[in-house]
Length: 176
Image (tube, rainbow, N blue to C red; front, side):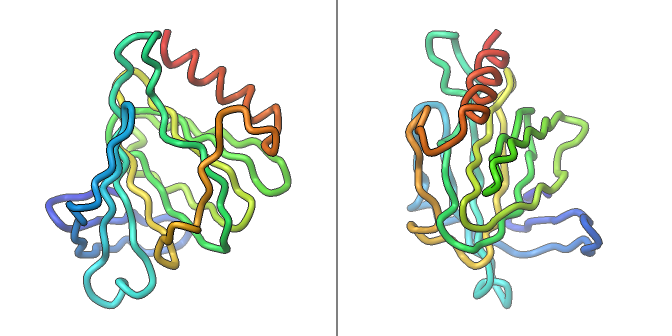
């Protein structure tokens, strides 16, 4: 997956054909946090009714004392599907399925654009950038609403200790 100008190119994956869609960034909706930012976009044309998306940019960590190398940890509250891909930099996608399985997928520069598909109620996930920072493209079907996900505090007891252990390990390892 990659964005060139105002076109999102989606690679062939899981038997789905490659495609290109015209998008429009919602510049008034850019949201910056400590070390990362979001840029929501909408699809133009027929797909606009079915999906929308967001570009996440995670800055490289500056010092171990300023470890802002990840986006928020969220729990999916609705039955939606996500397609996500790291398009610049490198990092880890960390997730916990509704059954409690902890999943880690490492994305490096030579794997950029590979699509990760996940979704449904109960999933928990985040992205953790390595030393170069990261850019992630996220597509949500149906379109994202503010009650699609719930931001979770770090070490929230409703998420398994195995997830938090992996989260802290990855953050520590990427800051060394």
